[in-house]
Length: 255
Ligand code: ZN
Ligand code: FE
Image (cartoon, rainbow, N blue to C red; front, side, top):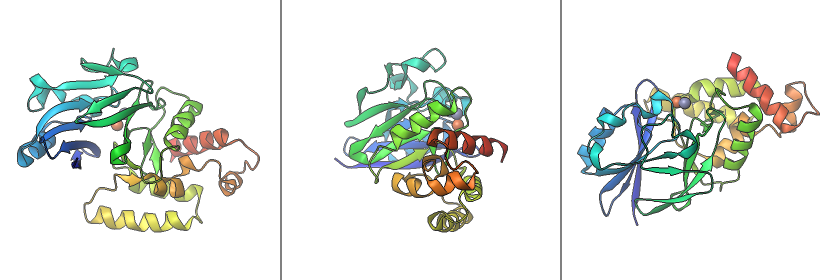
């Protein structure tokens, strides 16, 4: 069945994603930073919104919900662990659940770290993982609630997905992330050429999200804590990957 996924820039640097079933013309949206750009796409394409998928409770991911077109009939889906601080949920989900979204089997992966109860919606049939503020293009979310070890574990789960999985992250932070990544791995040729591609994309006003997991594995320092050259570059040649990851996250906070 044909589906389309549209990246929708919202607010300053947020992304929502509209997923449409092109046969039924029904749509779902992942996160709602603001309603207007989402309502606009739905109207323009003639899609009916039936489902809202919420990755975590932060305002910049949920605050547009009330103003979405067709609010009355929406099925709102989010993490049971986060239900006390999310908008009212119609369906609560947890790690390892599978739900149906517009006919797409969707797996729930708990990726706590940025917040406790942050989830990723993984759609293997669409090669799509909606990771929001967990794994991001060339980065990972800031640790507001979880420990570095917990985020490392969450990213390790995402890193087990197939190469061709597209990572739909929640913000356009990629240019800054690239500058930071180069301080961790200045010699990484794939990273250097990705930085150039990012510059071109941003100059043209194009999103750098989504990106493939294959590319993230080759360039994202937060997925590369096991690389010996990185540990050596950070002056911790014998450290465990989780400790290298912790150091990289600490440096990113100060960058
Ligand atoms: Zn957030
Ligand atoms: Fe966010």
